[in-house]
Image 1 (cartoon, rainbow, N blue to C red):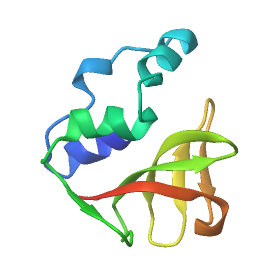
Image 2: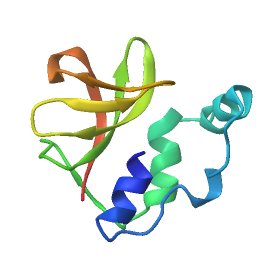
Image 3: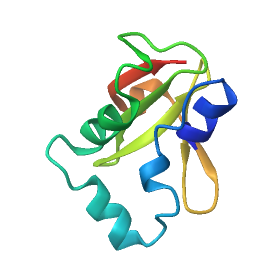
Length: 103
């Protein structure tokens, strides 16, 4: 979802290498790198996006929620996180932003 959002905003697709990965075990294996999901995104994003401390509406991030790292888009008030069947909206105090990129 976050890579699609970046593309819509005129940025390169940082998830090209992992598109089409839908098997849960394959998804877990892709993330199972030193540094976790942040390292994976860093590899795909490189220097294409600025890293920021405070998120603004439209920014993307890796956040920790419920003991797992997930990708998220900041709406300006909440983090939008894609679930299996729906999009969840979590208040900033419900997650820990691991790394935020400005779109």
